[in-house]
Length: 274
Image (tube, rainbow, N blue to C red):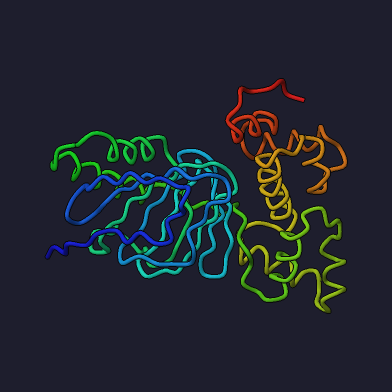
């Protein structure tokens, strides 16, 4: 059975541009270029959405979780799932909207973040460029479905734990990444044991509290750098006393220095690392 569904575009920012390639009666692929501060308000689609950041980053809110995602991630958002996207820097996002009848094998009923693969991005871009033949479009879609099954689930994005007490801690740290208190201090304030909070972070986010806080701080730093903060100021703002330790942690997480990230996010040539 075939359903002729088409992507639903909602809350398109006035300063964004969209190129849509009609790739079949069953799926479409869009390529959006957005300026810093652009936003897709809370919405859902009739189709499943596979989204990939070709450049820049996105803050995705889905099912009460907040994820900060970059080109190393692929987003899976099932049909009818409410979500919101905010773009803290100039970005380009490529999305494929697919009839749920064409889901990959397995259980894909929940949103998830996957580690990207160069071939995934190449295929998505290919589907927005030129006019691939119907046979090639079908092969690309089938190969993308196969690749999604093999991609590992990423758990180190900045997700909020589901436990309400741990969520309080996470939310306050997202609001103030430089907050220095450790888990024992938070446990004392909330009247629970530190072990309870620790288990809640691991169970709800897949990472320890300490690693979660590092990720939250570094992702907050990407926004500051994109907005024009210096490397030193960004590091201090998210809780690093030493600029060198901030640079080292940033490089481990994102594979490039904060200075290079800032240059790329602002569209300038790369300055000397500092």
